[in-house]
Each structure stands twice: as structure tokens, then as C-alpha cells.
Image (cartoon, rainbow, N blue to C red; front, top):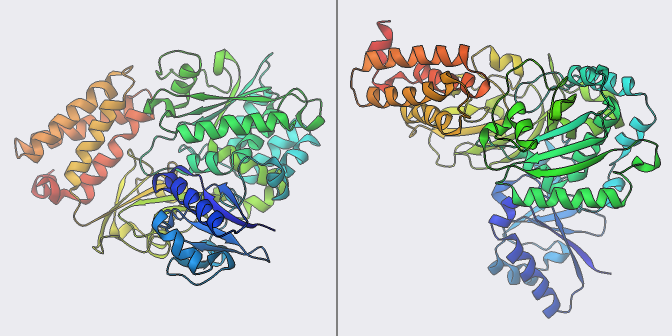
Length: 518
């Protein structure tokens, strides 16, 4: 009987040489006459241990070794790692690690555990139970379950998913669509990619349940062009799901039809905005649409459309399988369920951590991230992507909760957290926000298109000491204009990082006296 060895095919592991490690393990096993089965999985989310090699013991316990390089493989065999032998790279039973055990993995529970393209392993690990339940329910009951769960859109806006679904359900139309926004472009975010590469059937199941709920028969997954591995994984998983009868004219043998198509974006950050994404899906330039009409009433090709992101759809199978209350029992206030946090930047242990809403930033960074990689004090933390606010160290006890963050002028966004130590220049970070906005603007509205350019110019002059007070006053005016008059959140949110940097770190702008005089 062969021993099962698990090696990630996740893009982060591939970047660290996972394919070479897998090849070396196969070669070494053959040379020693040892029977092994190598299974390529998704990532567990422990980025600092990639490539993480896991060996399954007789009782099903998986022992981890990482980060493994090809040169380490011979030593692992010499240490009898296939039997759980002691080695310097050994981390012990993976699921017993404190970092892992402290999480509540409702969405990512299978990621890294199963072959992402085996529908049989997916089913054995609890997959498709939510779809089974949905097939026995009326559409109104499915929507009500999602509503009662408290699930809010995980893409950034935090809009209640149940309300959006109810609107599409109630819309009269000959055709409706389900669109998954997988254009994950925020810096420091990678949860969508990890799920698509490591457990794509969860997304397929969630989208199919959404189709049943609102009466849609067609779905699209719009994936950013920088994710070639995720795109290939989704295309393969969709084909497997079709062959297994999960997708197609008779979903799991039912009279309900639903199919999914993967589409690749063209590298535009603005297509993370739902209406620009719909324009791109229709074959047009990715430009933001004016609202109303809302996509729920007139979306893709003018038809009622549910647009949610990967993590929103991926939460749905648990809700239908275990019940709305089981999901809502996690979290706090109006933020229910779990949040897949993506921790990056200057930290010792970056990666994906799934926890119930309510954990504090300080807990995430200290207990899971292990503090800064440099060993220097934390100075700023950006939450919510490149257009999220910068929080100083004294605000790190804020809970990861939509309302708690909004109360201090921040936002949760897609759950990305980027840590900076005390060597960061916050004036440069503020200027980067304007530059980023200018580079990624669709150009449709003047406040965003022109305001971002002028903002970067004014900050550059202020940083150089040229008419500092006047230029900072101009920046303040531009921030107000962009927030109030931009057509979409791209321009409307750009003031967040700029104003937070000025407010909390005025010394970097040489502006303390100027601000005090206002």
C-alpha cells in the first residue's frame, strides 16, 4: 500500500518551488523502491512554510514539513519522514498547530486537505450537502436562509447578500444571471485565488445554489488576468462538475438547469467594480456604469443579475448545509459568520486566517502573524486594500467588524491586512494612493480622472516643502471632491489612505504646524 504525500499546487507554493520538490520526492522514492502517491492540493494558508509537504500517517493524521526545497528531500527520506520521522523541517501534525487550531474554517475547511479536482473527495469531505438541501427547498426558502444567516458581501461593500438575492428573485425576466467577481486586485489579498486553486467546487456549489435561489440558469466567473493558475483550475473544475452532473441541464438529476463559464479579465483594476466588470463581460471596455439601474434589475446584458465575490458565494454551501443559525452564531453585531483574513506586509507569518468577526487587528498581527519580520515596532497597518485607511499602532485594538472599522474612518474591504514597521514613509504611501487611483481610473468621471493626478502633484510639492500649507489645503479640497462626486468607489475611496496618513502621521509631511493652524 502506497503512502500518501500531499504537496500544494497553489500559486504561492509553485512560486517557492513546489513542482521541483514534488519531482524530487517522486525521484527519490523510486530510487529507494518506496511506494508513494503524490497528491497535489491547495494551500493551508501558512505562506511562511511553503512549500509545505504533508505525509499521511496510518490513522489519517498528516505530519507537515516545511518550507521544503529540492535539496532537503534526500535528508527527509534519510530521516524516515514518510513514517513521521523527526527532521529539522518538521512541524508535527498540521491540524494540531496552534496557528491552525485557533481558526474557525467554515469556508476554507477543505482547502489543502483534498485533491481540488476530485468530486468524490469533495463529496466525502462534506461538499454538495448544501446543494442537496437547496434542491429540496423553494427559491424563497433558500433566499430566506441566506438572509437569516447575516451573510454580507465579502467583496468590500458589505451589502447583505440576502437582500440582493431577493431583489433578483422578484424581478420578472426570461433570463437571469449569476456573476462571480473574482477580479481580486487589492494589494495584500489572495483569498479568492487560494479558494479557486484549492477548493473550486465550493465556489461552483455556492453559485449553483444562487442560481436555484433566483431562477438563473447561467453563471460566469470573471477572473483577473494575473491569476492564470486560478483560471486553469476553475476551467478544469467546471468540466469535472459538468461530467459529474453537478452542472448542466439537470443539476444532480433534478429538473433544474445551471451552468458556469470562466472568463479571463484583461488586467484592469477597475473591473473589480461590479458594473465595470459587467461591461467587460459583455465585451466592452471596462468602464463604470451610472446607477440606477442596479445590476440586480438590469445587469449582464440588461437582465437581472446577482453579482457577488468569491468568498460570498463560497460561504453559501455551509449556510444551506448546516443552517442559517449555525453560520450566524459566529461573529458580532451585524457582522456574522467568519472572515478569511489575508495577512501580509512586514510580518513573520503571513498567510490566510479564517476567524469569526470580532477578533482585533492586534490579535491577528501578534498571535497569528508573530509581529513584524524586521523586529521593528509597528507604525501603520492598512486594512481593506490600496484604498483602505492607514491605522496607527494605538488603533490596533479595533475589532474586525464592518461597523467598528467604519466608526474610526476605516473599512474592512476584502479582508486584506498589510503591516508596516516604523521605517515606512507615510507621505510616500499617501502619494502612492493618488498615483494608484490615477493609473487605474476608467477615466469616465472628472473627479477621479483629474483629481487623482492633481492630488499626486500637490502632495509631491508639499513633500518637497513647496508652498506646503497651500498644497495640503488643495489636497484636502480634492479629497472632499473625490469622495462626494466620483461616480464609483474607486475615486470615492481614494481619500481614505490619503487623509488617514495626514491625520495620524503629519510629521512625515512636515505638516504638524500647518495642520494645527487650520
